[in-house]
Length: 477
Image (cartoon, rainbow, N blue to C red; front, side, top):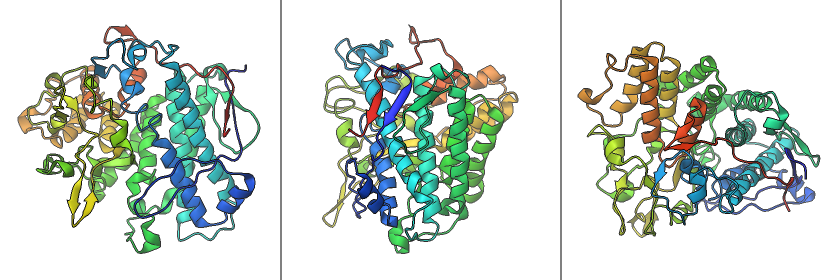
C-alpha cells in the first residue's frame, strides 16, 4: 500500500439535467468517446459544471458531513451526543473508530471525485470547438478552477496539520490535470500556492462575470444561465475564498485586500445586501430567510437537504443540540439569530436554520423560495476577516464587528463598546463568539479553532488532522 498517493480514472464525468425545475442527477462515469461528445457543445460544458456542484451536495460532503455533520461535531458545536450516537467517537477525536473512519474516507473520496470532474472540464475547454454564448466559456472555466481550489482547500484544512509545512509527507495530492498517472502528494505549502494560483486565474477568467460588471441578465438571456450567481463560485465568491485561504495561510495583508474587495462591492454597489428582520422573521414560516440568503457570496442548492437533516434535527428523539445554550450564545435580546431554535415534538432549542416548513402553495404550485440553501461563503465572514486583520487598532476592528451586529438586530446600547473591547485579544474573543453564533451548521468553526491553534475544546485535547485513507485510492470504478 502506498500512502499519500492518489489515482483516479480519466473519464469520470457528470451528466446534469438543465431543466427548469433544477432536478439534479447523480454522477455517472463516461467513456472517452462519450466525453468528447459531451464536450462538443456548450450545453455539455454547462451540464458537466453543474454536475460538480451536484456532487458537492451529497450528504457525505456539504449536504451534511462538511457542514453540520462531523466537522461541526469535532468543533464541539454539538452537545448531547450519547455513547450510541454515530458521532460518539468523532466527538472524542477517535478518528480510527469503526463508526468514524468510513465517514472520513468517504469525504476524501468524494472531494477528489468532484475535483476529477472539474478537471475534466478544464482538460477540454481551452481546445474546445464548441460555440459558446457571450462570456460563458471564460466564466465556466473560471468556476471550474475555483471549484478545484475550493475543494483542495478543504482537503488541506482537514488532512494537513497546517498550510506552511514544506514536507510532502505532511501534504496531499493537488490534482490539477486529467491523467491516468498516479498523482503524488505535495507539501501543504505547495498545495496552498497552487490553490492561490488557481484562484487568481479564476478571477481573471471571471472578469466579465455579470456580478462584477453589473450587466443585467434576464430569463430570456441564454435561458437565464447567468442568473442567481450566488449559486455559483462567482467573481466575488472567489475573492471571498481567497481571503479565507490567505487568512488560513497566515497572510493577513493579502487576506484583507481580498475581503475588502467584497466589502467595497457590498457598500458601494449594494451587492449581497444584509437580510432584514422582516426577511428572517416573516409571519409565514415558509418564507423565512433562515440562512440570510441575500448575503451569500456562494451557496449550494441542496435539493435533498430536508431529507438529510432527518435524524439530525427532525424526526428523532435525540436531535443535535448546540453545546452552548442559545441563552448563553445570544446575549443581546434583539439578536434575531436566536430565533433559529424551535421546539420539535421531542425537545426544545433545536437548531432550525436549515429546515423550513414544506412550502407555500400558490395557484396549485408549490414554492420553497428560502429552503434547501447551504451557505458556503458569507458576507459576514469578510467583516470578521477584516476586523481580525485590523485588531492592532481595536476601535477600527470593533467598528467592523458592530456593522455585522447592527444588522443582526442589535440595538445601539447592545453593540460592542470600543473602550471595553480595547485590545487585540479582546477583539479576537469577540470574533470567536461571532463564529460560534453565525456559522452554526456550516462547518467553519472547526477551521477557526484550528487556525487559532486552540489545544483544548470542551475538555478534549483536539486532533485537527483527519487520517488519510490507508489504501491507494482509485476513482471511477
